[in-house]
Image (cartoon, rainbow, N blue to C red):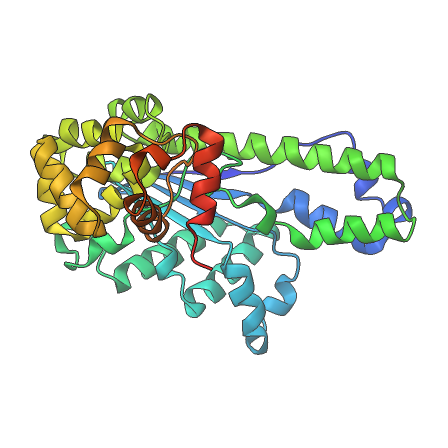
Length: 355
């Protein structure tokens, strides 16, 4: 097992940000927490069934309070931004947010406290917490897993930074520090020049840390599938990756479907739980795919066929509920009235959201 914490880079501005005389005691304290808190804890090969564990950690500026049982709400709020990613021996990606119960989060707070105090054994303590969460759902040994294990496959997360549904929810990771910087600017404790430099440093640090985590994840995944997704408009969508890699004998058919209908990528991912649609997609037969999708979304085959031959641009990968409204609105229009360019499609998608 190889453990690696991902921390943020040091910048010349750090000395000023952590100087209570220059920025005020509260901002200086939060700056130190911001700099000391690891962005991710990474374990390579934590067991024979798992290639990688990644625990993405938000800023924990109130650990002393969070360890007190009466402040459970603080732990829950903090836990909303924690991400626990696992990659199994077959290179599938799991999003284990559902395993982060209140009890598990409290134990993670304790483990993180050990990390920040630089006490020995911090990595093992956090890993024990994660394995205990897996054991409760029978995921420690994959051959003995429960039948509902696919619910934990990553479905919507993306590896790209600064993208919708990115694995890296940057703004949620250090809200206290940002609020303190804004407050210090408002009360003239710091000037606009220092505030701007601090924000630029934050962006550079976070992007660097995110790229390091993404590179570690990518190095553990199936390279051929990643290369195929990079050539598609879906990009590094972990749900699409899982959908392709989960059935190697159908990988070519699934890449073909993503090539023809990138707009429906999330619906394809959700078909993991829909055997009839999955069989049609894996058949590789255009007619069967069009018919199954028309039935799934309650629209005419002509509408699906038109989208198949002329994929809309600029809408990315909408969630399945939104896609359903888009297709049904298209179905109600003559094809000559459909949008003709990317801005038109984007506007159409926005108007398709139910009021």
